[in-house]
Image (cartoon, rainbow, N blue to C red; front, top):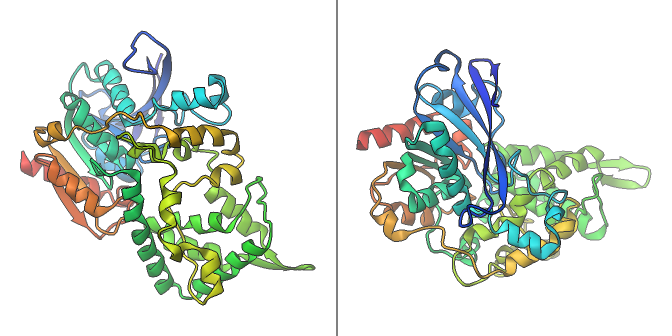
Length: 432
């Protein structure tokens, strides 16, 4: 039985679905999916077209809006919206350090997690779509990794898609994980340089924190081993609209004077552990690099290996001279599975996933070249998380896709500016 309830301006309905773990084995093991339907209060009884939202990640559940927040307000003007917790996230059979041992040991866990990529998410959508729409195709809105899933949708089941809208999420169709990170580190470095230009005093502050971490063994209140590499990874904030400002506020009060000298303050440590912990989204760390696995090569901790090609990110070398300590972001490393108590029990599982070579293709270039689904995509020119050059190559490879290239927004533009959704809708309708 579905449960419905109200929030300001919206009627919400909880849905649960049972789908195969492996869609190639429909009679085998099943998992449960959760999704929240949202419809404008005054339109609850109307026959509206459906829009399914695929959020970023991988590893995050769908947004938990209150009322008609953010882009949802615009979407509810004309759609009935399904906010899907992708498999393994939120309330959809979550995959965590607490639940994965139910599968058995690390090898069994790694085998299980091979079914948690974009191709399986698309098949989930196709399994539940007829139950909601009566068989009609729906509009797919994909943000970030949700855009990767949308391109897989156009490759695997375009008949299920009426319109595709992608924000900050056009993947390379062919790049190996090494290529992705080789393009990423220079983008990250540019974001760090822009931050230090905005807040020059943060160069000194970051050097002081990094020096402290290199000379002290710091464990955060939740048990997280706070290394200099972990500190540098706080740079993931720099890819969002207000991230540079939030990073600055974090750094400005890092130290407090104590009877034994200056120490990292409790307030700083509390904020740092919240930003660093994967307790709420461990699947992100586990399968992040596997979203680029499509050939017979392992991903093999690509971000860690490629980082060695960019020695300017070595904090110890920066401190030995007078250069700035560079932050990183959007990368997953083996040390995270040692530092983070939410990931430690899963380190062997992660290693097995990094070594796998049997990943199935996620995209069909020939089918995309013959695409007939109206598609529009926002490509953020200065996006720290998704390479704009790769995105535009893919835009050119999908027949009929209408790209909107802008440097007005960061990667989270859909969240911060409902105009992004308006612009994409106008692009696909102008094409029609």
